[in-house]
Image 1 (cartoon, rainbow, N blue to C red):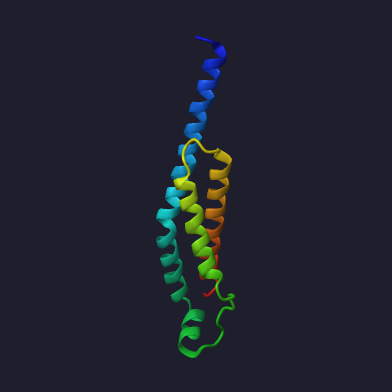
Image 2: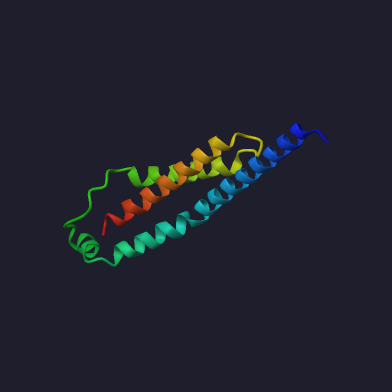
Length: 116
């Protein structure tokens, strides 16, 4: 067996393992999207500030319109992009999509918690 062929095969196997790991992280993000949003919403509703905002309309958070929905959709699109890219694609694109997915997901939870 040629040593260069063995090294290339080893590198391809490592790339596939990296792809699978990044894809698994993307699946976890998609699976945790709704639970994280719901738990953030429940935590927000238990605060006195949120109760005052709901009852009297006082002291409500000033999150711009569309920011919550755009973070949700950005999380969903980036996660699906990372999951649906074929394994032969470049790992860098998938990794960038997963980083954008988790950034948007954490931003969404932070925005929901800002209502508290």
